[in-house]
Length: 454
Image (tube, rainbow, N blue to C red; front, top):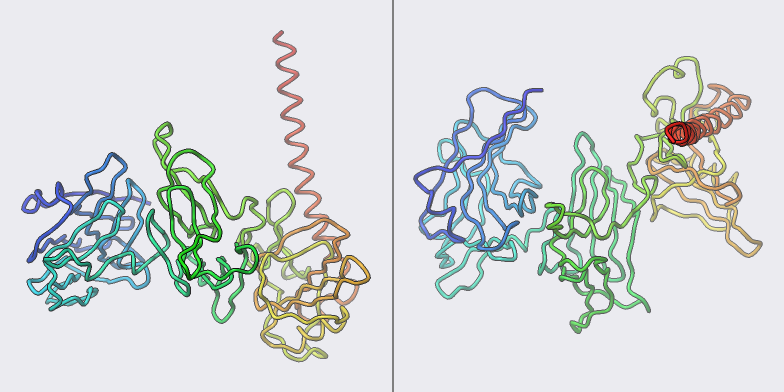
């Protein structure tokens, strides 16, 4: 892949890059290439804050994406993109990408023939200038310095120092090449991470205040993420673990993990002081759909071992197909010592394993079920039903957990079920064994060479 990436500044507006604000009226443009070039990024920096590096910068950008060019307004903290006007909906253009602050105070992105692709909708509200504040908040101000529009009211996947998010707001992150996406949601009783795919909505991490206290808003402070009640009283905090001040919170689009980041002068980059999930297998998409995350943090397929599927690399082949008739089309493949990181799934309590199987078999939308036998005599037997076969991981034997996947009936019969269980366990054992042998072999070779040298 040939990568074209460059940044430039239009000489006509060179003075703007040294300032933190732009007065009305104002216009800047970037020419869009005539031919599509994979990896192309054209960027004109417009403003920056007067701070020690890393500081905030505002840019007009043109980026190649899926055969088209998108035009967007962006904010950077150092090299990290912390806000983008096209985060939820890209504006595709050709020939030219224009950022215009009109005489009546509307900030807009335009293409050829005055085509408007994005706007703030602030016409006639007395806007006098556009300003990037030291907090990274991009604002439109009137003559009395009152805020008429601000990026803090339109969060994307990053929360900056000093920013507040009220209950019922969220951060959203979109993995590349996936129909699923992640959200960080602020609810009355908790802050939670969710995996969303179509109609399915599952949480995979949460943080709750003690004593069931209600949350009104959260705020990112220098010491960590703070939770407040309706009386503006701090009721909980996820603290920063280093003496350096916190700069931003981010919801990663590759993993769905939540991190608090500070700037390390020694390393010259941003580093995470806190991460919600510290183990690979606790991530919702650590493996591909119908894959299982093992103790060694590697992935193996949960696949019905028919001849036509043995050599395929697609873990989803032979796994669930929306079967509705439990007596004719499907059966449940059970794996002991296997669990799922996804929560908030529909639950049945005090049911048998056979009843749990039937609940999933008779539901066209169900793809898998997790059955808990309970650790003690008084523990309830629980059945969780899932529409997705993701977030599956290996757990210790004896936990009383059985993960069941809907598969075509009669493909391999009862004997095939046993073979599948043995195959999955054998695959997990082989992978973990190879890793252990490699580690021990490497240590042995190291000490042998060291002893020989002495």
